[in-house]
Length: 171
Image (cartoon, rainbow, N blue to C red):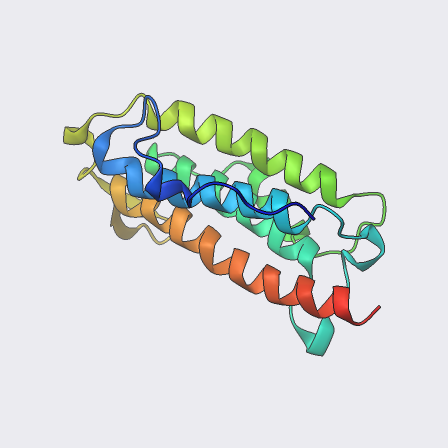
């Protein structure tokens, strides 16, 4: 595994085309991407669906990070989830031995590119607009949803790293 040579994302300055108030969310999401790429470089797919100590699998975390980002962006656009999104949600964490770690990471990369493109279209005045979450329309804001996507990705990244470490050392 190669050594990380640069500072964390938030210490590298603004991410191009991202509004100032969305920089912290963008930094956290970009850090998630880089950490996934780094820590899962030599992760063996045979362990993708393993649940050490009954905890969530690496495959679940990868699917969930992508799914939450997708759902939060949908809600931030004041839209409801599609059938495809509900189907994806139901499949998060279900063993699929045809899926590889690289595929799940690539799916997150694609979703992150879409998210950053969307972030670039937003203006600061948009960020405090009220948004409803889920069928119950629980109260949030556009900024709250995008921040949640970022902090949630970091939370699951941390869990994924612990699970990955356990699995790599138990070989």
